[in-house]
Structures are given as structure tokens and as C-alpha cells.
Length: 441
Image 1 (cartoon, rainbow, N blue to C red):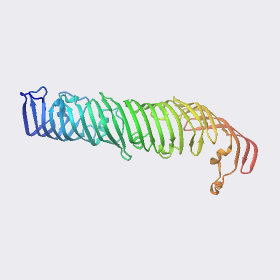
Image 2 (image 1 turned 120 degrees about the vertical axis):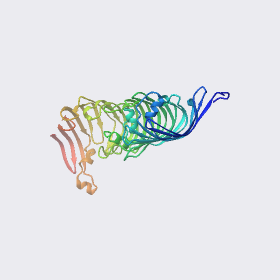
Image 3 (image 1 turned 90 degrees about the vertical axis):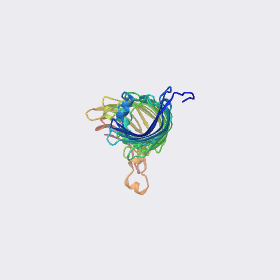
Image 4 (image 1 turned 60 degrees about the vertical axis):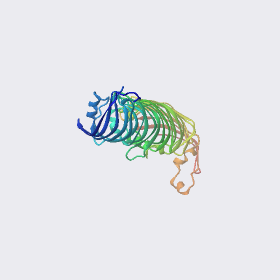
């Protein structure tokens, strides 16, 4: 307090042992009364435990969210006016009464404004935690990302806890059975009645897609990536600008994401460079490759059956499953259980394929997709047609000629009927020559 406030009177409490509202508070503290603001100093308290019922009583009204459970630990503080209360050390463990087995541990030091506990504000307050159970946050704020596991790390906090700014953040996410993610950066989290709003600029020292895939099982991805991430908004409407690189190549994205169940959405686009589907997707989901190009997506839904929206993909020189891919383009739409192929032109070393039409996404939906496939040189098909003997000998069969096929596919992704007419000319295979060939499929 400023010099000259002679009317301030200290009331010193020692050997405290206070019990109320299923709580027990032990230790010592001093109240300073008579100044412009009530002061509390020389604090040395131990919670054995402190139940949130006691904190609600001291606050005089409910908190913004329904905290339930016990706090155990210690607080040592030189204190001061409640508007500038200095904490030297604090170590607290929270046992959540809402979520069985959820325990979080946090320590902190710095200055607080606790004049109105419901609107506690941080003044360059340093926090650290070896483990925060994410289930507690998800219970209190249902739209918080449904990530499995715990978070640990440190940060410096400023402003009201309902609209907190964080800086120097170094946070790790731990998901059972997956490598950890480590994020560094700064930003702001605004806490509403049921919704959290984010504004953060982060550097992903390591972002575990394996952990993300465990939290969202319909996302079959894995691997560790690093790069920059910018986020603004809520989980239901989150603007994301990201640039990541890792074992499966480099990826950028700029757009909006809805990661709140039951319905999901992604609306935006970006670029892939040297992208290897086999390295990014879990085993068995895709062949190896090195893809380069741009993409734009506008999808909502949580499964193939109810996906709606569209996507455009433009490929540059790439490789997929041992086949060279040249400039290619596709534009598709999904609605009413169908995938509509508005444009498809895929040019590869094996064949050039064009297609348009639609197919069902699940049983019960039937449609037709028309296609054209042209092979300028059958040599491009050699990897798919060579004999076992040729493989063992190391010598490839001679193969030449042109082939085209025109037809249609009818059905859905569960069951397809293929029809088409086959035309071949100037054919040559393993010393066998033929002027032309014709057939039906």
C-alpha cells in the first residue's frame, strides 16, 4: 500500500484450521483492513482439501461453469491488495467430481486480481502443469476438441480468465499409444457460457497425426509433422491456416473446419508437395506415391453415406503406385448418397482416362458413370501385365500397340457392374503380332 495510509489495520491469523462446506483449510494469513482495497498478505495455506462448494460460497454466486470436485495442495504468497495479489508458489491437484478418475495438477506464480473471484484476472502469471486431464475441460465446455489423453506444459497468462491471453506457451498433448504433440506460441482464449473461442499463432514442433487419428477414428492418418498453425474461431467454425511437413510430404491448408461431433465439415484448400498417401494413411489404405498439386474442398458429414459438398483436385507431375502422372484434374460433388463426377481427366504413363456421371456411395443407391480410357502405348501397362516368369528372370515381355476402352460403370461403391467395348491396334506382345483386336467387357 502507498505510504501514508495510517489507518490500515493488520489482522493476523495463525494456526488456522478452518472446516466448512466439505473443506479444510490449514495455515496462516494476514488481513489488511482500512485501505482502498482489502488486502491479504503473508499467506501460507494448505488445502486438505478445498471443495468447490466452499469457493462458490466465498464467491457469493455460482461460477460461469459447474466446477465440482476437490483441490488439494499449497499456496505461499506475499499477497497485497486483492487487485494486485502476488503468489510466490502454488501447487494444486484437482480431483474432478464430474469425471471419474480425472485428476489435473497445476502450479503457478505471479500476480492476480482476485477482488471478484468469479472474474479472476492474471497479471503476467506463470503457470505450469505435468498433466491436465482433457476430459475435465470437455465436460465443462462440450465443444472443446474431443482429444484423448492429457496436456502438460507451461505458459504466461494475462487478462481475465474468461478472456485470457497466453504467451510463451510450450504445451504437449499426450494420447495413449501415440507419439506426443508439442505446440509453442501465443494467443487468446475467450470462455463463453458453453463455447470457447480461440485466436492463436502456433508452431508445431511435432504434431502427431497418429494421436489425432486415435481421437477421431474415422480419420485414418498417422505420422509426425511440424510447421505453423494459425487458428481463429470456435471448434464448430474454426479458421485454420497451416503449413506442415513430415514423412509424407508437405501440406498447406487455408479455410474453415468444423471438428465438433456429430457432424464435421471442412471448407478450404491448399497444396500438397511430394505427398505420399502410403506414409500418411494407416496401413492398407493407399499405395505409395509422390503427389504434387492443388486442392479445394467443401464437405460436411461424418461418413461416406452422408457426405455432402464438393472437391476439385489439380495434379502436376507426380507418381502413384509406380505410375507416372502428368497434368490431371478432377471435380466431384457429393449429395443424396451419390458422388457426381463433373470432370475427370487423368493422364498417366499407363493411360489417359476421362469420366463423367455418378455412382452411389452406399448400397441402395445406384447410378452410372461413363468412362473413356486410352492407352497410346501398351508398354505403359507392362508393370501390370508382365508374367511371373518375366519377373523371375528379370526380363520384361515386349509389349507395344494402342488400346482404347469406352463404357460405363453402374452401381455404388459396394457393388459395381462394368460394361465397355475394347479396341486394340498395332498390337505386339512377346514376338506375337496382331493388326487389331476388338472385345467387350
